[in-house]
Image 1 (tube, rainbow, N blue to C red):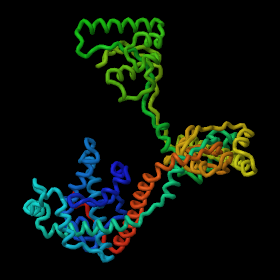
Image 2 (image 1 turned 180 degrees about the vertical axis):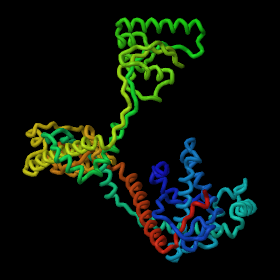
Image 3 (image 1 turned 90 degrees about the horizontal axis):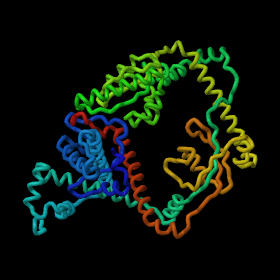
Image 4 (image 1 turned 90 degrees about the vertical axis):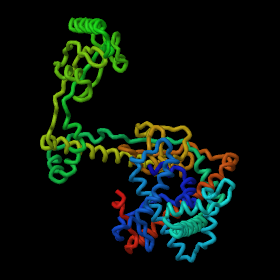
Length: 502
C-alpha cells in the first residue's frame, strides 16, 4: 500500500515538510531491528523518546494522510500494520533530522514557534484574528500543557530546517533535464532472435548418467519432485459434458414436470445414438459451454454443485446419466473420462526426474552453444540478421519502441538488459551479447534509430527538471537517513518497540 503514497515523487516531497497541524514524514525503511530502551518507550532516537501519547498523536495524523490519499479505498484494519510502521518512520526521521540540526548549530527561536502558531488558520476566529483561548484549549487537549507543545513544535521546526538544507543540495541543470527528455523520447526499431528450449541435444540418457546424478545431486532431484507436485499428487477427476435446461428454483410444479420430461427425452435420444455435442449446441441453456458442445473440461471434487458432482463422479466413462436437478435447472450429463487419484512417491519417480533434469541441462548446453555460434559470427563482422538466417533461424522485428522501466519488448517480453543495449547501438549494429529472457536466450540488432526533434524536447525540459530535482532530493535524503540510522543503531541509540501498541 505504500506504493500508493509513493506514486507521485513530487507529492512525497510535499509531504516531507508540512505545517504545525500535519506531520513531517519521509517514507523510507527502518533497516535492521532496533533494540534498547525503557519498557514504556515505543521509539527512542538518542535523547529523544516517544511514548504512547506521542505515538498515538502521530498515528492519527498518518491515518488522516492515508484517508485523504485513498478516499473510499481506505481500510483501517488492512492498513493497521502499515500505519504503525509509517508512524515509527515519522518519529524516527523527525528526531534524526532534529539531532543533525542541533549538531550543525541550527536553532529555532521562540519567535519562530510563535509565528508558526499565529499562521495556522485553525487558531483564528471568524474575524481572522488569532484566538489565544482556542489555541490554549487545543494545546492542553493534545499535549497536556503549552510547554509540551512548544517542545514538540521546536523539534518539528528544527527537522524542517534540516530537511530544507538537505533539499538545497539537489540540483539539476537544464542540460541534464534535456538529456533525460531526449532519452525518454528516443525510439528504435530492432530485430531479435531467440533460442527457445527444445530437444537439441539428441541421443538417449544412459542409465549410468542417471545413477551418477542421483548419487551426487539428489537434493536437486528432490527439489524438482516438490516443484512437480501437481504432476505426482493428482486428485480424482472427471471430464464431462452437460446439457442444461434452465429452470428457476421457485418454478411451479407444472413447469418442473415439463422440464424434467424434456430432459428425459434428451437422455433417451442420446442413449439411442444422438450426438451429444450437436444436441448441446442446439438446446443447452448454458452459454459458457454450449458453443463447445457442452464440454466442461476436467474438474475435481469441490468444483461443481453437489448434486451435479455426485452424479458426474458416479457415472462410468462413456455413459449418459439420468437427469439431475440443481439450482440452475435440469442437467443431462455425459462423462467422457474418469481419472483416479494419483499419488506417486519420490522413490517411484526419482529416476524419471533425474533423466528429465539431465535432458534439460543437455538442451540448455546445446542452446547456449547455438547462441555462442551466433555471437561468434557477429564478432566476426556479420550482422545478427545474416548470422541467424545462415543458421536457419527466424528473426522477430518490432515497430518503433521507446525505453520502458519494465524493459518490455513486443514479441519478446520483459528484457530490460536487451532493451538498454539496443539504445546503446547505432542503426545497423548488432550486439554479440547473449541475454537470458525467461527460459530463452536472445540477441539483438538495431535496424533504425530516431532522435527527437528540438521542438518536441524544449517544452518538456522545465517539468522534467523539476521532477529530477524531486527525485534527487528524495534519493539524497533517503541515503542520508540510512547512514544516520545505521550509525545510531550500531551504538544502541536507536530503539523501537511496536509490541507496546499491539
